[in-house]
Length: 93
Image (cartoon, one colour):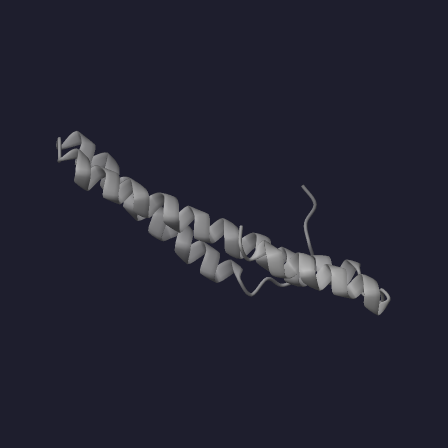
C-alpha cells in the first residue's frame, strides 16, 4: 500500500465512526455471552454494520473528492464533466 502525502480531513471522523463500531461490537459480544434476546443482539449488530458502512463511505468519497481530483487536474471541460458525474453517482454507494 502506498502512503499518500495528502492530509485527509475526514480521517478523524472515520476513526470516530470505527471506534463507535468497536464499542457496539464489544456490546454484541457481551450480549451474546449474557444470553440476551436475539432481537436486541440483532439491533446492535445493525449498528455495527451501519457505523462501518458509513466509515467506508466517507473514506471512499474523500479519496474521490481529493486524491483522484488532483490526479486529473487540468483535464478539458468535457472530461471534467464526466468526472463530476462519476463523483456524484458514488454518493449513492
